[in-house]
Length: 123
Image (cartoon, rainbow, N blue to C red; front, side, top):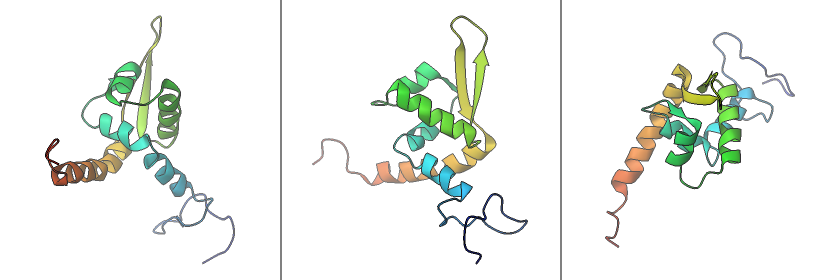
């Protein structure tokens, strides 16, 4: 293994070195597994949503954190963003093919967790 900051894109057939701090794949993992990244991906799994709809679907997230999370996920290619030229602008978000691919195991994990938890109020 070569030492140092050599990672931008993996050569054909080679994987990223995700344990290097400068690996781009590590940034994507950090964004997906951030406090709000998972919830954004899960919220967009079945429908494209406008910003306010997304904010309403994720209880506890501030507008600032939602905007930051969406910006990172759009930059990573997991989420697409469409702006309608109205006053005020209407912004819609949805999952890209890459985002759906990443979101699938997250949704499966979420479903497994909720199936294993005892029913609410049964404690």
